[in-house]
Length: 112
Length: 114
Image (cartoon, rainbow over all chains, first blue to last red; front, side):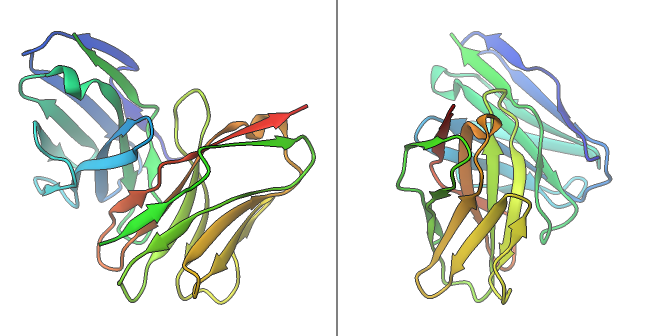
């Protein structure tokens, strides 16, 4: 079974802090994705990566950056957390662009 | 631009009955894929079913089937014989021809009544 894990289920940070959300997949998938989920808006793509050290902006990249130094790990970075970044963050991976995405359990981030 | 629309914010169904969750989409890509995911209260997104735009037959996976009507740009999910464990939020999503990016709808919350 594909397994996608995220470093935390719940996280509380203060405004202005630098926040790292980690995602690891164990199936040698090429593609990895970061989404945020907000009520009434569904999931929106923040960043994605097709390969190690490659990244592409999604629909809402402002205020975020990513890092993919190893194939299995994709990190989402909030350089200076703000209250409007309070959300559920979901990581996903897929074998390539034609296959379904597998999701991690999500990290519920609260910025106070 | 690609867009997915789910017009039913919430739905109820009686246990053991069938239910249809609506999804319409808009795209100019020549080929695309349509997905349904289930999100229980635990938060994890679970892949349910996939339909390719060139697939001749509607996709089925156990109690799930996808009613794909290309001309109407709709991809409704049908759940037969609903179970209490089907209570969850359901998302329709679309992938374009050239990227692995998914565009999601707003979701439909389904509650199954005993």
